Image (cartoon, rainbow, N blue to C red; front, side, top):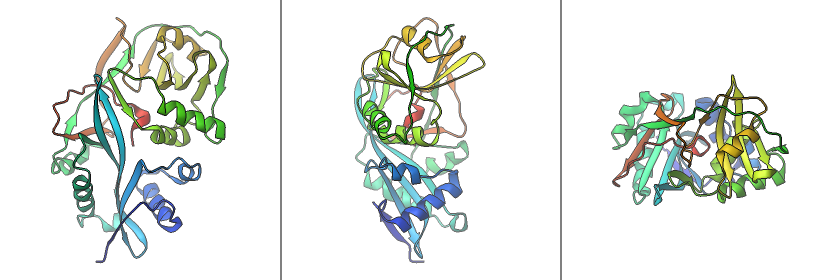
Length: 288
């Protein structure tokens, strides 16, 4: 069959619509609003196979940066790996994966997230499973009142804040992902639109929720270093008994516990020739 390899087509309405249809069919996600708000940038690049004007397979990349223990690495995150149901079993995903891995072979770290059932598929490309850790702060806090603004990605001022603060976030000395503001904006658009706040007192954007006495801190986007004991009471409207982080927190406390993190739908695969030690929590708002 005459498959055509296409990329950089986000301004092509027909191909973009076909891409969105396949993404919705495969993952239940839609890139329309992200594109319409101007958040789909050159950082996110799909590589797709087209047949009769329709996208039938895709592998996307995000060109990012890792900082691990203060050491910087070029990092390529692969995502949106999908093949139309009717075209599976033809080796299309393997063909695209080989193409992308050869094209970006100069990167220090190439990685992706997928379900555990895909281990066999990614092992053939020399990816290895990396175990993550989770952080839980077993400490009680009571609320402290402050001025809080709920942010909306539909508000241009709020949208610019989310992107600029993400680009300028204070360095995390343990583990951080840079150049991921577009991915963070995707989460603000599609995953956490009701959990997005700005706290003027600490000049920080917070993505958080509280349930059954637990604060789930999905992200804290600040341009200066903050004191978590001062910050956490500002994030809650009810007492909490512990805080669970969806990223690697950059502070130490004798009540901050590091435990194994397992999510079979988001297994962490890494391909690298670098001698890295990475047993931290990858930030959820940088996960494509």
